[in-house]
Image (cartoon, rainbow over all chains, first blue to last red; front, side, top):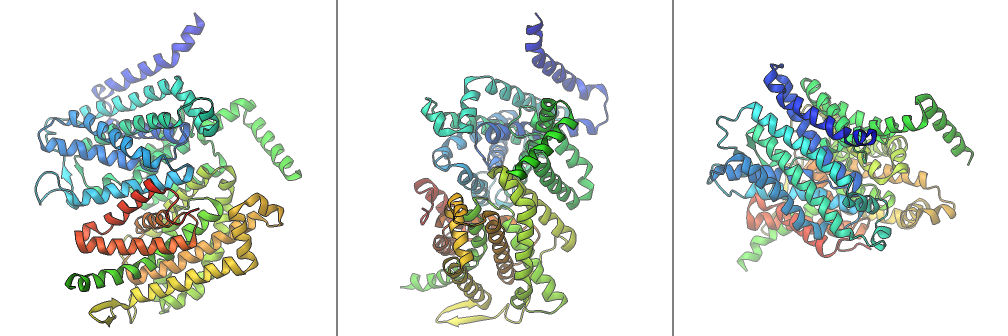
Length: 332
Length: 288
């Protein structure tokens, strides 16, 4: 009995939190709360999926902006041909997933850092394509001028908020399922040593492809939802490297390769995003400094530090064992 | 033959522009070759070099190229410090950690530059900025020629340094096999510092070249970083000759792309080439 309760505890608490968050905008909370939380949900979805790629699949994919921009563009362009935007959001995710599947044969040929460099170039190519290509709206719209999202009359911040909540929760559930399935086990094996994984009968390419496509889909949906809130997209914003920075920052601060990491990281990134926004450049400067400090002081992120502290039995014990380790290293 | 005459100008400009790209990509390529670290802050370090030249030429009235006499040693020492205190500690953990640190450094430099120099677009004005040389029917801007000359000097100097000097050979050895190099009495930690210092000095040179040629803002580093990656992927990661030829190909395909497809086609053509090269030959045209 107790075991069953313990087993379903995370699921139950996730359900309760989701319900509370879903009714929140109806409860007369300050108007900025839904806005903060909406950003948190989108960032959470992004960070979760980046964690799936970089933390669990060994794919240091530097191309989240490609999935986001592509999905958001798909959604926006579809609203120009009278497709409702919520259909467009799913279509956007599908377009991002399809794109991921198409580029996978060429980018998966590169390993490790080579993969990282190869994927870094991808959003830039898409940005240049969308600077040229004007699928709808004639010569006045599109290109560098970008597109407005059409058909958004009657859509309120509440609707957008719920969409954000849906993708945030979905990303948590998808992560949970993957990590407890055979796919997660196989991915972990690939991350640790792909040659050994392959010799143990794991289809390396297929598993990497699955996680790449899943991540592309969810990132794409999150991006399309974000741009349905923004109401406007242009190439240099949609394919901007800042999307990568955001996903990377949230994942690393929280703890890469730890399930709860992106959750903690996304909270911190959202706080930075809004509390430091009025300082402009100083905001990103501080984010950069925090990133460097966390990477040097606690390379496993906040959740990683928490885990280590728990394992060592208190912060004092951890520090003592760390300093012992350092002395030992010096002696060697 | 009409078309050939039309093409003469984009071809000449493309090759010269390629020279600028080579200088930008060289530092990135060196650090990657030696440490296998992708220094995503390299573009911003180049822009820092541009601002250094901007400050020295506006406040001291120094010629940007002359300012390198101060700039190169300054950046070299800065590079050693960045490597020693930031990159190396992360590098010992994992390649990913070093990459993330580099991202942090990139954010810091970009936004510090915005605070200090404002987001306004800057450019270097010298007596030769607007001059151009007429060869046949082709006008060649003097700054492009200067870029290309600097690229030639830098590539030859780096090549000779790596081949002929003890330190250069140590760097090459450590990049080929750091454990064996260690057995031969080479201290990899020191080699990495020097290599990073040289990459920074190259960034200072690239910064001057860039500032002479294009207007720049604190955010200009990212597009040039991505171009530099394109150059390195085309030529092959960690190969000097490859980087040089990659830069030429990139510059040429950019100007030819612009010639045939209009301004928005300029960068599209080289990047599509990069993708094709990645698919067919992931190690680049001259990679090992």
